[in-house]
Amino acid sequence: AQSVAQPEDQVNVAEGNPLTVKCTYSVSGNPYLFWYVQYPNRGLQFLLKYITGDNLVKGSYGFEAEFNKSQTSFHLKKPSALVSDSALYFCAVRDNTGRRALTFGSGTRLQVQP
Amino acid sequence: GAGVSQSPSNKVTEKGKDVELRCDPISGHTALYWYRQSLGQGLEFLIYFQGNSAPDKSGLPSDRFSAERTGGSVSTLTIQRTQQEDSAVYLCASSWDRAETQYFGPGTRLLVL
Image 1 (cartoon, each protein chain N blue to C red):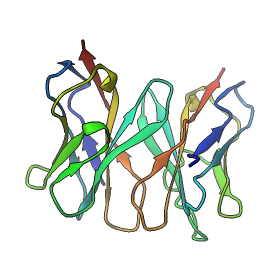
Image 2 (image 1 turned 180 degrees about the horizontal axis):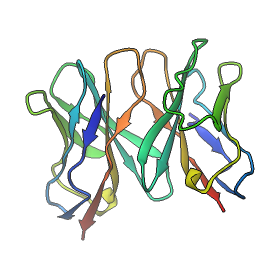
Image 3 (image 1 turned 135 degrees about the horizontal axis):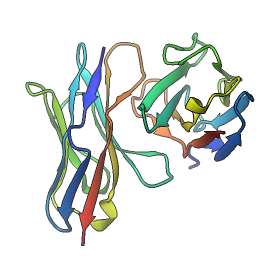
């Protein structure tokens, strides 16, 4: 069975500072990894994904994530946080077999203070 | 272009009633997914449709839940004899056949009284 852990319920960061939202995963075979963001009363918006290739992937709104196979991690990062980045962030994984369903972490609320 | 749309955006129903939730995927997307987001269970997979293949129903929590996809496009999720624990936000997503990114709709917020 596959699983995702987001160890922090909330991350607080000052505007202009770098941010990191942590994610670790467990999956059989090679992972497909995703980050989504959710604003209040909205659906999930896709940020970025890792399928294969470079371990550092860049996504929307200046976000990036680094795939680390040995640590089974896929942490989300941004060099300089904006107040508008405040939202709920979800990490998700699926394996590279035919089953397409995503397994999500419990979410991390990012609060960027002005 | 148009994204995934869902209707209704909100639904309030009484315990024991049946409800139908609708999803219109992005045009041309052959894969369609239903997920449920609730406070206690987080985001959980319900069912997946891919083209004309048999759907993956492995996430449906009980036989009160069913879904169909007509003409390879619109999907309806039906919950029969609703219970209070069915209260949640029901999210629909779609993707291209060989692409991995699932694009989500705004969700239907279901409240069972």
